[in-house]
Length: 137
Length: 104
Image 1 (cartoon, each protein chain N blue to C red):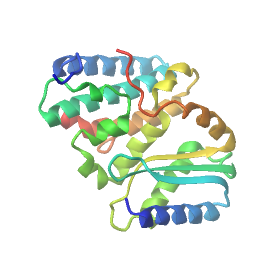
Image 2 (image 1 turned 45 degrees about the vertical axis):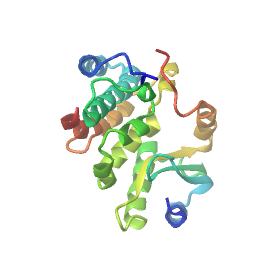
Image 3 (image 1 turned 120 degrees about the vertical axis):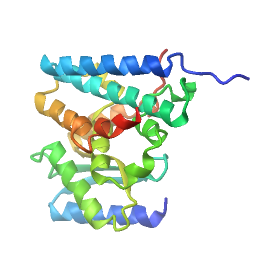
């Protein structure tokens, strides 16, 4: 039986990542805080799937990776060992896990302070989650 | 995951709760099921209401790493601190299966 793969390949995911990142910046610039927070998690999800492609050295992932489970995706990204020794990175990732899920699609009001915390957890240097992952994408 | 690690975490959280005079309703420490990752949930009847969510979470995270992580092997992938009111809302959300498959 053939292994079922996700339709999008790594090149498509990479384009999607760039597009989602631009959308995230636009939402923040427009003060659309709820949208920015939702987009932040989606951005991280795409980044993790790219990191897994690179770690596995494949262009398309099996459909078992077609999930929104950020913890599972991070574990499979090949970076867990580094993660275990970096408490600040853990704190940032834990903040995203605790404050993001796809159920945010059904929520409205968020404020700038909340969005800023998410932004810091993702993009602070050197231990923001996306800052950390960027070399592995 | 050794149960002694879970016990140490729970004891340390209880110390933190006493230190900040928090009336805890629930302290949950459990393996996430992925590697040695751990999920922690603390719900308070009183003591969280005037303490911003991010600050109390960050305070507990640092306390746990300073007091319950001598070998630097502890991996806390989820740490949530909530008031009772927040927990009631969270409880409903978490009835949704944790791994949600995409609809594509």
